[in-house]
Length: 259
Image 1 (cartoon, helix red, strand yellow):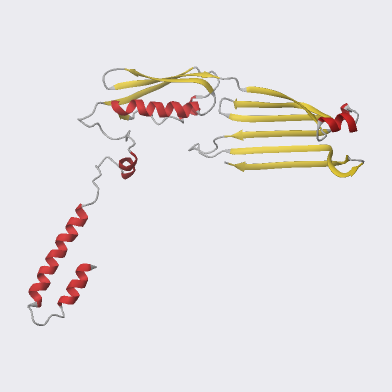
Image 2 (image 1 turned 30 degrees about the vertical axis):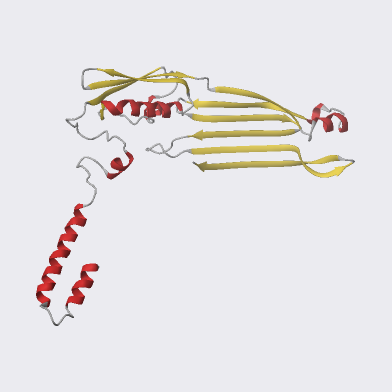
């Protein structure tokens, strides 16, 4: 914009050789433009701008003669009696055939270790590189699976507090809610979650929840089914002599949503 303004003003000069001045100004603008273009950050042919900014090692780039590079040959998983291999492999950044510098290997393995442990499916996770030769390695992953089934008994008073149940209602056991809630994690070895709830007594409640963490090919979209059924004298509608008066009700709920 500055060069165009100077050239426009030169055309109004009458007492000087305007053609000579115009030629010099045009030459100067060309030099400025060439310096501006050459000032862009250099990115190698095998390196992306995102890799340059974030400092993340590019696992697909060819070896550089200045670094010692290793190629991932095979990934072996041990200890997963129930959990399927794709659930673990999904969390790894390293894949068979990837090339990584020896300097970056420890950093990437620590990140992959943390991602596998964050699945909350294992008590311990160990990732060890096993050298085949000076340039090829295998990754040995050993996990220790935790317990996935958790039944939880339920015992609950339907009244507002213990004193009300004991004094106002004469500790009537028919006003007690009881049942069980069952959590089943890592169902089918695919990290699915099942929740079952059965409650009997003064207020009956039944619940079913099923969670699928991955439903698409990229394994980034999940789905949840939930069904809930409640019946009994569960809705207080009035107060008589400082006592809540309940009326019968029936409620059914069904939901499907993604996450």
